[in-house]
Image (cartoon, rainbow over all chains, first blue to last red; front, side):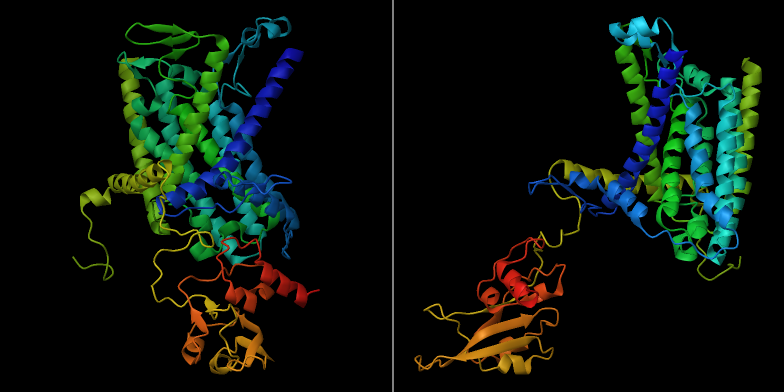
Length: 378
Length: 186
């Protein structure tokens, strides 16, 4: 159908714009937030001069992202004499593409009925309604996990094909770390699946739109608090950020697995890291923080526990849900950046001990307890 | 129990559980963040950093040796008699003086035609001020505007030394320096 095509093209555009835009925003947030946390000012020297005037738009340094991108694109693309050119060139794409794909299964809004948005659209769209999600897959979580598994390949290939000892060490660390932490991440997610009884992310979000004890929103963070902490930890480790940034710790390994990369290939690694922040935030929001749900907001408007209601038109509801998701993702990303600039890096044996002896048993315990509770309450 | 290494930290159970200490650390950094953010939102500076060329630091000593100025007589002529003592004593060879003669003025027959200081060499030792017999060169508290894209802008000309004005804008070259630049690169 032409209508389906229009809607899904719009969704795809929104998804790509969402990820790239917020990832670019996070490069700025990371600089500014860390600066403010450390009593500094932060990047503020980039400006756009309005043509023919002497007015300089500084905008709190927001243009540094553009300057970075331009610099990366214009720099010399230096290629070392590696023995494996193919893998060397393939690795950045293999690192960046799966991260972009993960977002396709994440619902960024409730149900959209385009015909009810504006009266002019009704003739074209009729009464069709679409879930606001690029791909409504039944096995959403599995897709997320498998794509994040492909991300490891890019890292390993980059380190292996660079023909450099630092890269090699970084890639070895990355491989063992990401595989170790994927175990506890998977276990944390399984307990979540047991709670919600579904693998579909959209159904999960709908499950979270209910209320606990009549007033508290039934978000995953309230029903599965331990799984939230476990997933957050494992996700930061998957993302290779401080305190788990051993694959690229600059004080030991120069830049780890992407030491030999320059120009936009290195930029792709950096960009994929920032997109990964967005994706991890989106996953956290979807599975633990209620997704696009604002407390007490339903598809017809607000219904408060005291009995008061406030009906809203469809357009307002859709905008509220999309905006809620956006704000939640940005806040979750800011929280990740707060963690990144607060904690010191693990030593490698501490990292492995933490992953295997602390996180995994806790995740397994959480799963057992969840399963027992589920067994008794079903 | 013997420690594995001499400064192995002694941690209680609470600290070894890690998660609570992590939360405490996040509260500290988050507190600093929100404190500074509140200062920014109420139009104060939430940072210890000084904006370098724009902002004049308040913590310069009152006898800080900053930029050089050439003093003037009452009639507006430069006080300097071009004795070359400052240029001789200068350990960095930063001062260059080209003299001119004016025999009508019996008290000051010699005067500088060009008096220039190369700030890319000056080490701000203040010897020129001490050597000067006429109190013609002094150093004031403020520092000159150094940031520039061309080292030729670091030559302070006589005109500039007699008429120092803080320009506060490194992108805008002081006119005298601009003129000197055009003489070097016509």
